[in-house]
Length: 245
Ligand SMILES: Nc1ncnc2c1ncn2[C@@H]1O[C@H](COP(=O)(O)OP(=O)(O)OP(=O)(O)O)[C@@H](O)[C@H]1O
Ligand SMILES: [Mg+2]
Picture 1 (cartoon, rainbow, N blue to C red):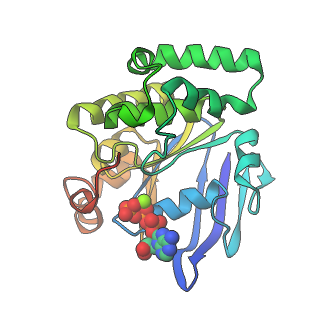
Picture 2: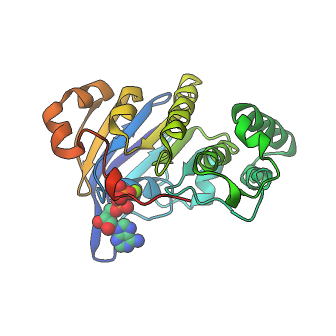
């Protein structure tokens, strides 16, 4: 479904992604793990069309999307749950969802709103609350629900558990499990390496903008030397991360 080939992305003189290649097949949950500054967000933002790669190519469903605009990619079936969620804080839960459903017909939009209310009871209870008043866990669920409003074929998630309390982390992992079991294809960047590798069909370890290794989730988790060197035992970079609103 997604084929990233030899992609290099730069911010001016800084090369954040070097010659990165990866694939995501239909129905897979693929995890990206790696320390702070490894280029994980740069990778997702490049795939989502928010950054333009200097070299390399990106295929989505066989189409070349290397230089595609983000809005076109949403219509093609690609949705991003961005790092730090980036909700419209002054809009209500419902308004955030309605806006995200702008690519759907009226009938589909209504149906997806109902599905969101079913999948996220927490959001149903706060339907008319401004997003700025949600807790971190609620806001994260809204960010995922918003991405689902375009009924994406590929869902990109950037650090969905960042800054969340442990019980909320459990809720987000339950949600990822449910979406995977429904057959949703996902590319997930996650600092909770141990847990995401347990869930992932396959995973890539990034460091300094490069793919260090890849394999099944179980293979990466079982490589203790690699794990201790690059990831650590209690997740990646969690100590240096700020909390998201
Ligand atoms: N807007 C920017 N301008 C300049 N350099 C940037 C910018 N965004 C990221 N970088 C640099 O690019 C590199 C990769 O950053 P990126 O945010 O992709 O890493 P990451 O793996 O997502 O890290 P984290 O775990 O902290 O979220 C880092 O060295 C970072 O400082
Ligand atoms: Mg990041």
